[in-house]
Image (cartoon, rainbow, N blue to C red; front, side, top):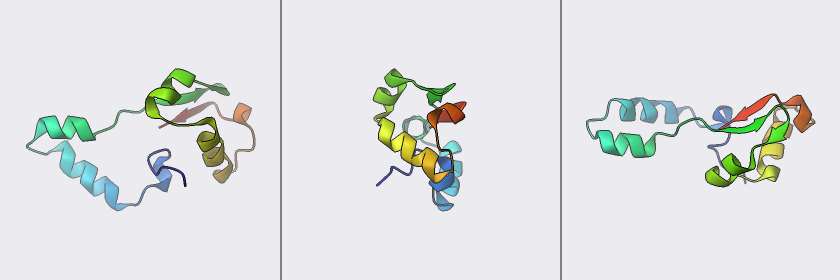
Length: 82
């Protein structure tokens, strides 16, 4: 099972309303803890292993998401952002 946080298009639509609420949440410290920043995982067809380790994402998970988006080879991906 792939984590839903890996690709934005796999997230349920209701998460955007939660993120919108948290952006204006009166508890700013809580908001910054929950809000994720984009992380580059693949650049010019190469895995960025440090970023993958920090985000706890495996090569297999990234490749599976690429396949589900009809990308057959890692070299076809200019970038993968989480």
